[in-house]
Image (cartoon, rainbow, N blue to C red; front, side, top):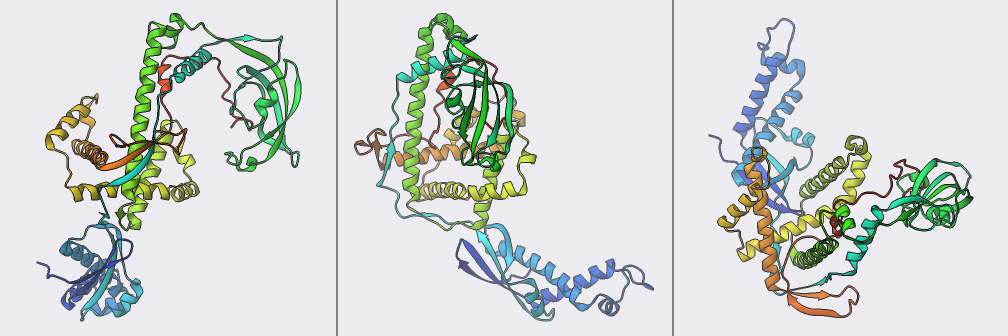
Length: 484
């Protein structure tokens, strides 16, 4: 049985802890003798059988410093494990010596007690200045009936028939078949990848770099024209960013769109609905649900922000790095799903830049998680076992093969989501939330007790109503320096 260590703990900034450990002389000597024994078994010396090298000879050949260093390495590792276990410390990341190993080695005398100071990140203890009476302001989201017609028009454009046009100039909404070549305006050098022949270009805002589509509009088939363009400051190719360019463009062919009639036949072609009326009702229902969900997300965003404002916690660096790593893994997974070569794209430099750019988001995610954890503790909020079991059963029903699911991981994930929803519902009942009309933020809507979930939706998924919509034309996938 290991003798209890003499440990003195002291808190450090950044949710770190220092453990000053007094290591008994007997343990120091035992570690030194073990190092001698270990080295004597591994060192080969002429005239001695392996494992039979006498101690004096061993020390003469490899030097006492190497033996002491080997003994100290093992001693520090074992002392660290025992001290953490004895003090019941929840360590994050890799603990380290206070000072450097060389300084400790100079002090190390196997016949005497050794004082080792270890520093480590520990789990933060979040607290809230206040939990009730929080005030927040969120932007309201209203259902816009006009969006139904907009979505129907989009779907009609996708299902339109392209017909050759020869009796008029190109207009926005057409598809132009163009050939072009480009040079930079400042030095007249050719733009790498800045030329193409017979490229289909949809004449829509944002399809190409600034000036390109606008330059094609007004041209007639057979026309040639030089067009001034501008690469955006955030263009992916660094050599092009913010530079002006001149493109020589010829309009080879022009195609216009013949839109299908807005009738039941269109509804059947564009969706799984049998009538235009059913399609309209479906789009209206989707848009209303989307607006409700986005407003709910806005409320929860506002409530979480108000809660984080009450948070008092020091975030350990190891926890931030762990969260950054999670964000990078999520990004890599998303890129892989889109068919991108993650190994090729994630160079060491890219990873470093992404990590730096993700630090703010990682910190915010941690703060929100810890604020909710502190709220649960302060108000004694938890999830009932029956609710957890019911939700697990509901979620499991959606899996085609439950044998591939780790039951504990599923349980933990469901429990976390349920607790979050429970905490947000509690906040809604105990916080004052003012809904603000985005069109007139100086006129707050009536204050109310908030009621609902999660982060702000950035895009409405209304296009889901166009389930079977087909592309109007096969636009060339050739990447050129004119396309954004």
